[in-house]
Length: 337
Image: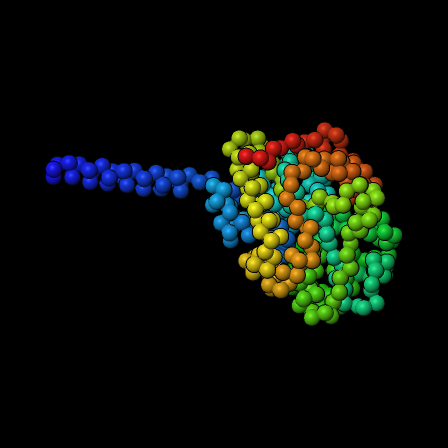
C-alpha cells in the first residue's frame, strides 16, 4: 500500500512539474508585436493603450509593445524600414513614401479623417476668416495634407494664410496660441477637445471635415485616414500575418469597449494620451464615428480617389499613384484568423 501511495505521489508531482514547465515555456514563447505610434497627445495612442490596460493582447495570445515617437521620426523610421509596424500611417503621407520606393502596405483603417481649427478670437468663425492669419500645424502629417485639400475645396485662398509648422505638440503647441504668436491651430480632435476644455470656453473650434462635400465627391460618408502600416517584408511572413490578425481582433474589441463605455475608456487612456479625463471623454463622445476598425481592401476605390485624383490635383502628391502602386499599398489581406 505504501508503495502505491508513494508511486501515486510521485506521478502527481511529475505531472505538476510538467505542467509548470509547460506553462513557463508557453509564457516565454508568447509572440511580441512592436508598434510605433505618434507621441501623445496623438490619437494613435488610444487604441494600443486601451488594449494594454484591458489585457486584450494577452487575451489574444500576444504581447503588445508600444513606442511613441514624434511624427517626423515615426514616419522616417517607417519609410526606411527601421520600424516595420506603424500604427500611425496616414494615407497621404505613406502614399508619398510608396512613390519614393518604400516597400510598405496598409492593412486596416483605424481613424476616419477629422481635424479642428482652434482659435480664441471670437471674430474667427469660419475657414474663410483665417485669411490674413497665421496658422500653426504639423505640415509633415497626413492630417495636414487632407485638411489643406478641404480648405481649398471650400474656397480658402492658401496664399493669404501664413502657415507655421512644428512637430512639437501638446502644451508647447497650445502656448503659441496663448501667447498670441499665432492666430489658430490645426489639430486632431483630441487636441481640439483638450484646448477647449482647458481654456474653460475661452477657445472654440471650427471643424475642417465637410461631410456633404465629401459625399458629393466620393459617395461615402467618411475618409479613411489613420491606418495600420507594415513593411511588405514583415507581413510576408506567415507568423507575422497571424500576429497582425490577433492584433486586429484586439483592435475591434478595444473600439467596441470605447463605444460602449466612453467614460471608463477615458479614465483608462487619458494619462497615456496626456489629457485630463473630462477632455478625453468629451472627444470620445463628440466624435463617436472617429474610430472605424475595418479592412482597407474593400475601400481601395475610395483610396484610389484620394491618391489618384484629389491629392495629386491639390499638389499634395507629386503624381497619382499607379494602379500597381495602389494595389501594392492596399493589398488583399484577410483579417479573419
